[in-house]
Image (cartoon, rainbow over all chains, first blue to last red; front, side, top):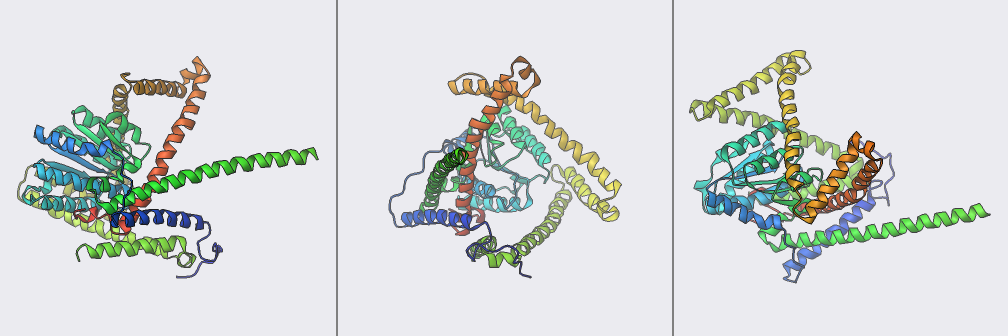
Length: 272
Length: 206
């Protein structure tokens, strides 16, 4: 591997133009680390606010159990490298455990073959942990197709045939979000959706009963498991958000002051 | 060991990517590009395993005459038929392209066009004015729609201006706030995974 020394490193260490990013990353790491240490030491940390979409998971699965109809789950159409897919797995583990506990059928539908392999193992493990390995049915964990709209057509078909009482969609969605959400509304399913794709959020908001906005899906693992270490990271992330807001505020003030000074200087120079 | 090894590998990979992205010595060697190539090799291998696995599962379906086994026959015929065509003609040949363009493309376009009808039915429900929020949503939606269609500017030049302001100022501000939250959330999620705190993908209890 030949050395590329075209751009001079910042401070002699960092790739040119990335030093500020690196320090912001360190700051966020520090927030998260401090909060994890606090929770491990049993010190008080601010509680996570109530998220209705996450609270509604029990209600949705309970409804499906009462009606004797299945729960349908989609982890979105993104691949294994998207953070939203990891968030969907945290959600799926909880949903699968509840379904196993209540003896409710869970139908899981994938678009990515790598995601599918992990989802199948995850659901199998959840049934095992719930003490119901016999209830796991691998035919209900389905890989449809890699094609976006082929997946959408298959998902809608399953909705019409199986008539799930609850439709849970958490992950990264594109144009198919509207098809899924409206299809679920048409069959009267209780719908919980969450995505980090801001363009698709309005569709979910219009057609679903509960919608997790953006980063709320990342909090799902911590929120549902109540694990102190994970809660610590969510609180640390909130500190990061506060720090970002303060930085933006300082940036706005400085930009305006600089602009005002520039005008003042300009006026001064023109007056001579 | 079944869980420790993947966690260790994840942590090492995360640290490696951070070093390659930010530290000049690592970045300048082109280590990031090399790592990306490894990723592509892993994906290609997984695709091959996927094809073999799919064939195995659906052959079993056909052999055991499970319900819907005729779908498995169609699937295997398409999978191996298209692969054979590609090997025979290569993927640039007009016959190979035609099969794709005459089947997959129209199917996908059909599904995509259905979205328009779904949007209309969802909008009908969302815009029913039952609460103060729904009323605000309905009014704003009407303004944006009028600002987007030619008749809006014929009625008044104010509609396109109102539409631009609504989309760029309140809507833009809201979306940016959500995006900042998502990026910070993604970072915290990545950190949880790199440190082995988030183990849902390993199928373990949390």
